[in-house]
Image 1 (tube, rainbow, N blue to C red):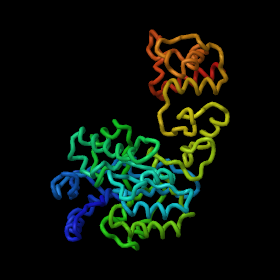
Image 2 (image 1 turned 60 degrees about the vertical axis):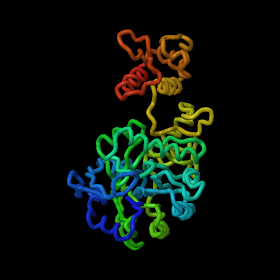
Image 3 (image 1 turned 120 degrees about the vertical axis):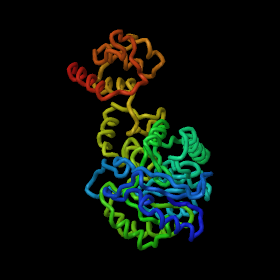
Image 4 (image 1 turned 90 degrees about the vertical axis):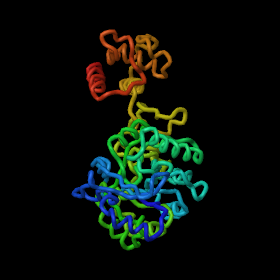
Length: 381
């Protein structure tokens, strides 16, 4: 989507041939399956190759974890950064409570743009380095595209970041594309509303599409070259509706520090779990996820068994058993004392029955294991 880099005539040839495929399943009834094709000429692929475009998973097209008494809207911008990215950031700057998501590529027309996106409290997503059709690439080539983009971003931002979500160029995805992205710790996001701003749509047409949004909708827009109409449409729409919606960046994307920081942690602002997280901090049960600063909670990160031991020990006020050295694999863990206390209290039995001489402190806690921990903890308390 966007950034075709072709003349007007060729661009419209592309539009006329494949309107449905590029729309990316803009409503539940629009089937984008093995009959869909798209055309593109980017990053070494043949000019105008025909590529099959599977539909996004339903869970990738809309956000279901919405909150508040207003519709939650997710504005996203692809193919930057360009000179228009800075203009968009200027438009967004007066709205401290609005966060959007930029799916960027290996370009920065204005130095400092990547850093500003994060500093202004917006989110970054991986749109590959060169905008290839991922379904036509091998796993190694896909990983290289994503890694090159992350390296490009980290050469321009401080501190370094891990990009934790991605959007495939042209919407060309598949089960293997998603699996490769997940292997790099990235969630895939598609879209549910496409105003076709990349095709030269007028400001009024873009605005008309935006007016149709509903709770949980993800809107794909573009801040690539030629996107001055997108900037203007965004400006007008926010003037009209800034108070009518909750504008959020996409969950699981790499979020910059919000301009308005409420509570102990800055990365839980807007989370449906924010009240619970801040309560954990106030009671001393959690200290954060990024020592020594501990100004982040990492609300979307999985919990390790070692971290869970610390949380339960603090929550229950347990102290007996420090230094018991129950397990053989936690001596170097920062949670070794908590683990020994938890074992002494009978809340954990280890991770390798029947021997149970290991705790596996760095392994994630499954929901089943969590049930066992809580059952024993409640029984002991």
